[in-house]
Length: 243
Image 1 (cartoon, helix red, strand yellow):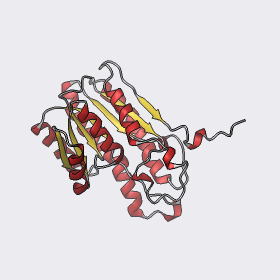
Image 2 (tube, rainbow, N blue to C red):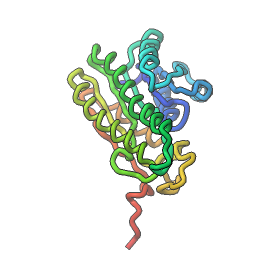
Image 3 (cartoon, helix red, strand yellow):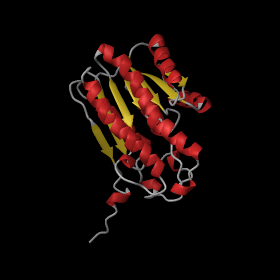
Image 4 (cartoon, one colour):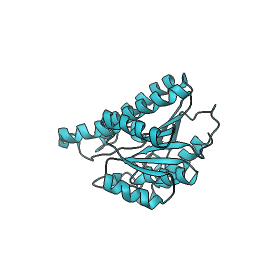
């Protein structure tokens, strides 16, 4: 896809991977709608990107009405959405008996329901034009069980399963769907984590993930990367002692 002068939506845009994505897409010449539930941080993040064609648009991705309003406002203001990146996500690091019901609901609502609602809105709009690219930023937590991240794993396994189904439905309408599965990334995700799986300073950076997604988006329209796994060599599954 030629990205210049096209419109992209990024959720969870105020920090971390989402913020890095917005910077990369803006540099590529896209109009970028930065969406996040934290309106104050979002406004600051948009100022930090500091480029023309960047819009700060507060949105709670777990609310269907707000997601639909987001899609409508973007297309009314700046034009048809070509790229929609469902990046919003969060975790609470607890042992299973210690999760509150509110924490469980929050993780399922933002990570799983939020991705479903964003994909739904994007596909509704893209399928009429038979063009577009949806990217769901998931996690390698969708591939394995991780102690103290069990509910997060449950949500991300659900997102990965949903994305596989979305790929099949969207392809019939000429819409590409990519699942991106980063391993450990040095972001605020780890705040409050009592058991880190590798030294955070050796994790991926948000820029690593953003750069990879940019390359996926720039591929020819007839080519789709269905699933992309990104890991640091220091991530736990690579912890092999030298012989």
